Length: 300
Image (tube, rainbow, N blue to C red):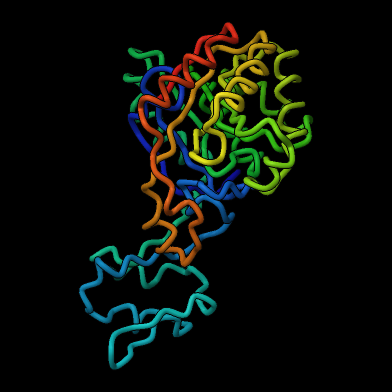
């Protein structure tokens, strides 16, 4: 029985592929984009999130923790993250949801059973299942089995991936995948390393290999002010995308500054805290510039 770790199974998604979909968010990612809006998906393990503003001061967590990670002080409470094993006992007793475990181990069959609850909506909207993250291909066997089981039930299958893997791994998922959605964040390799922690050479090479396979593809760029929000950058990405005959369309995704609370709950530094959402006028302008490459362009 194949299992893995997910952070969320989101029903009625309309931005992760065609139609109404259920999006399964995998835990673990091999990129470190400093603007990531899902920091709870970065580490491939369970983690405790703490939301102090929800705490009602009941003290139940002090008694439940086997490692004394929660400590009561005269002037409040302290949390020792280095002691925490993310066992979840404190979160189980926290009815105010000030303590939440990010990450749940499930079997592939359990995931698919949950996804199938909305099969009638997929059928009427030409929707299906999308694997996202995090990075689904880090849990390859789990991802492949979910998609295989979904295909058996007649579901359209899609995967959102950064493609930072050897081509053999990417190719091996294609037999159970109807649609690939991949990010191209920056064309300059040095800048890509600076902003994501990895080179983009393998990513771009895999996109070219996908084109050779003819697998339907959507390329997306998270538009982050100060990172890639220039006409030159977007034009370069769009012209690269235009070289791929399997491209359905290119999409610009506006950065949104709503992840601060998640980073704080995990005790993580958030380098994009002061970045604002790009203006609609800029999104419209860059969409027009990208379209000059002769491809269909959308933005959100």
